[in-house]
Length: 76
Length: 521
Ligand code: SF4
Ligand code: SF4
Image (cartoon, rainbow over all chains, first blue to last red; front, side):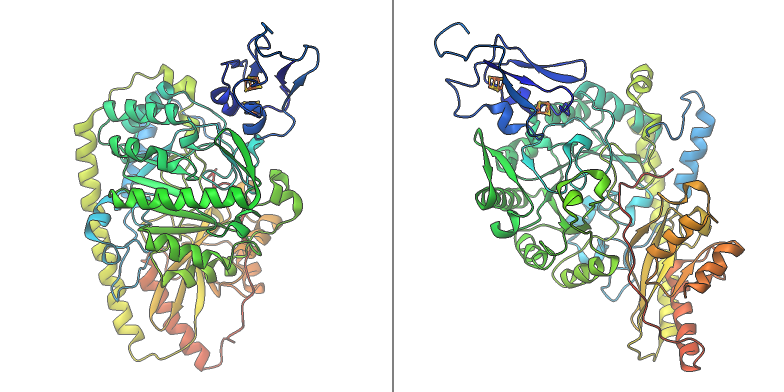
């Protein structure tokens, strides 16, 4: 799995972009999006997903269940 | 909202008129003697150390006197934040921290620098650039300091300032010093984690969300540490506090002591803005805002401790122009990127010197007039009577605004010791539909309901009758005169009438504080 951003809730504050250890987040057309190929759910870096922890709007950075759970060491 | 006043860049003539009109505004003298501040912040010359006065006298946010003369602007380059506040709704940007209202246009540092140069070239009295948000500048250090770097290079005469919640502050002391930032504002709402837990749901700290008292404790320690480090290094620090009734109102007296002892030179206590439609946590849970009386009482209690700032209008972080005179619509990204800016520092200096001379001359004239009136008029008056009066003014320390055009009223307290500026009441939001309308008039009366009189340059029949019915005396006879001098004459007359039993010393009610950002229309 990876995280995704609920576009309708995103304030485009950019806070998550700077915190992501994988540089998986960028701005696109005014809102921020997560590159699911780069997102490791912060596994291997931090105990909590950084985008979730810093986002001012709860339930905006959420698990994208359409991807399998990230496995540390595997090529997600 | 940014387009409330369309501006044609080519209309240089119209622009000159504006600048000219602005230049003609005269000083609102800060100190009339007796050690009592007379206007605004009370940041008058005599109450501040000379080196601090030297720094703040041309800063429109810090000196009531300067804000009629000099302009500041904020650029919204810092969207991210590292804490959550109950008075803030990040969907609509922060409601109290720096710009209650809306910052509609986010800029990157290059755009921001271009905007600053464009504005500074058009408005020579633009002397201060602030980064205040819409998030926290120090949660966006790269963007904030890049902006400072670009501006410092192109326009070295512009002062830089920033506002922060303080969480990241101790980490950036050296950078702040390097960029010669001379004004830092820290928003400190508490020093007690118990209180803080009711204001801040969480902070983002060391890659984790921290909540409750633990969060408040970290935040408070960082704020006070940052404040100390800055003042030790000679950087001017102002403290902003949001007054939240029942949460930190009593506590702010302690905050005042704590920040004063750490060298803050000014403490600005602002009323909470918590209208339900802003969607903040406080707005949703019905946390009320303080009344004008409560705010003034708290400011009075803290004044013995240190210089208080009473003229803050809680402007938007991207406001352009003199305080209270928002011109941001003239400088949108498209417009500034298309402008061919030539920054002429010499011309700006010459203009500012002229302005400064004019300002000093006006202060002198006004102070002499007020002093004279005070000595002549109030000599031998021993009275405990105190009344508030509202004044319609465009600045210059004179009663020179039409009642119906006033976007705000200055409030003076009159007593045996003279006239003292104690705050502003904003009514801007309501008079857009033209005055004379029932609704807007009620609102104005609500905003100055605690005043015995309102001084105006002119007033129509309809509002006049309504004011009288509400027990507020409309006073036109001091039109275009100096405020304080007139107020003292009025007070003398009021006392005489009181003695003759012509006016009853009716206890006035409280007044409502207008909610929302100050955006003049
Ligand atoms: S969960 Fe971690 S890795 Fe994934 S986008 Fe968020 S911050 Fe980046
Ligand atoms: S932190 Fe949340 S609101 Fe801010 S840009 Fe990221 S997803 Fe959007």
